[in-house]
Amino acid sequence: MANVLGIISYNDSNVYVEGLQEERPIAAFNFLGRYRLIDFPISNMTNSGIDEVQIYTTGNIRPLIKHIGSGRQYNVNSKNGDIRLLPTYTKSSRIAPDIEAFSQSLEEIEGNKNEYVVVAPTNMVYICNYNDLVAQHIESGADISILSKKVSGANEQYIGCQILAADKTDVKGIAINDGAKKSALLSLETYVMKKDLLVQAIKDAKATSSMYWLKDIINDYCETKAVKAIPQRGNVYCIYNLESYVNANLDILDASKMKDFAKPSWPIYTRTKDSAPAIYSKTGSAVTSLVSNGAKISGKVVGSVVGRGVVIGKGAIVENCVIMPEVEIADGAILKNVVVDKFAKISKKTDIVSEDDLPVYIGRGEKV
Image 1 (cartoon, rainbow, N blue to C red):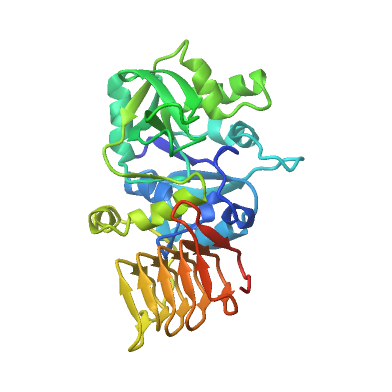
Image 2: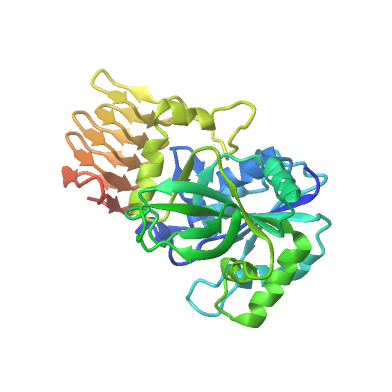
């Protein structure tokens, strides 16, 4: 597809992942042992033939600069397109609305040669051919299309996420899920529209309020323009707090779901490193887990994701955990429902056990 500009944006303050988000933007979160969350929207775009991708971000952008680099790993045709990282400048410590980020690059967006634009977030993990999505948008005659997913359990999950009020496919408004209903039409915060309309939306939002996000001006447009919902057929993993981050990692350990991310026809691109395979001692084992290259396992791993270079000692038990790269877990330690950030060392406190819905976070480089 050579007629679409890809834009990857960031989330508002309703999405907050305790601990992890203090160290890096959501786009830079480790996922499934080897990826960063930014890899999924970029891969959807490049696999769909979108060669021009703009990534808007706030906060500590150093992890993204290092991970994305030149963008060569994403299979972009560098002669015709590129992947561009665009930090948002703000005078205050608050998160600047995405409209502010777009406004700072308005000339670049306005001057882009493509007719259409796909705007996607970084906290929604799914597989989608945006070529098909744009085709559905054009066929429907909509001004704006929003990718959506019908979900159950909305009274307990997806709190603070965006949901759509819709009459069949016609979107009447965008709201924040307050848990009032068991089922909801979840917005995947993925929008398709003509580039010129996005430019107009940026200008209208700036003229309306300095606090407006793209979702807010689209919500206003529901009264005057044709805004339609397009259903996402495949699995969706929505990350909006620490529990949902853990659940998203562990849910994909199911073999039927893991297949989505192992299709030769739809690869998930990432920055790769040459490293030795994981090593298991005579006492080491892993069941229903994903163990990355370079790990050394002498204990027992159950239903967990283990990052690169992790060392798990003899007699240690790691269950329902997300262990990020270069972590050391001492002999005999017991971890259950724990997220351990990069370079942390578990040595003194041997038992760290929590409930399924209350995961414990151990910070980057901490010694426990």
